[in-house]
Image (cartoon, rainbow, N blue to C red):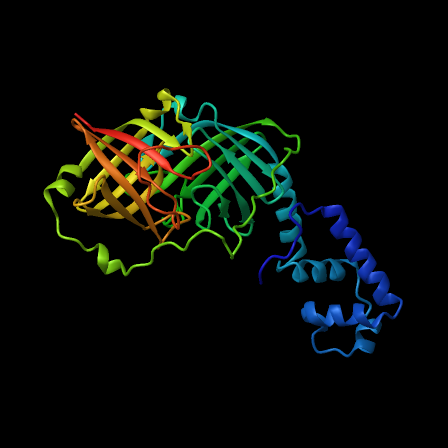
Length: 357
């Protein structure tokens, strides 16, 4: 049964609900009797009058509240709520390993994870991520499912496991599209991220709303829709020139320059006409590429294979500057840029790359 609790559940309030429900039952309330019948196995085949005469106790009422909230037993509900409260606060990274590779401390030195109830906000140098999460304390290790609501991964999910001990938290997550880890380890090729964090404040963080879901209706022009087969293109000399691993020289997102010290942790890898752009082990772009080399500047189409724009096409342009290559990509649904300007508010990403030597 899906969990149905408020964003920041309160165990004392849930206890009061159980007491109120039991008092209403003893007072002959028909709705309370029906609630017992609907949610308590021992009352399932009883009539309302038999339920009122059955002598159910507070433990039974607590079981009703638990089952009504999506939990098999009151102790699971209680542990769930207590665990959410134990996770609350501001956390900083002690170490981070992605796909078996340790991320340098400088990459996450300014990052922080804010947890408030079942809402989170991850602030990092490359982007901010907002969303909601659910935990399952019935498993060992406990499980966590993360839904990204705002940020580069909006609309995607990540599945993992976690354990906490006071002010220390260990998470092992499958990055978007990867399987749920079964152990606290990150190995090459698994797509797993092992995160160790320390709490710096147990106070309830301000402004953690979980983000705002994108409206279904939009005034933006619709993204170009194409069949995936349209990106099964023949390799050209230019596509082959773009193959291999590249390092960033510049990255500007929506008019904001990425600090130079962060560029060292980025990479662009192309094989055939498939490209991945990563920063600090996080995949920011995964797409198939199609070029129109007759256009000036050269036209680039990305069929997004992941992230918030999955299945949609982003339009852009590229040019060569000596041995370096520069891209300007619009967000899905936006028109193709005509020049390499990345003014704030346009939602464009300007990047410049050189081949790893």
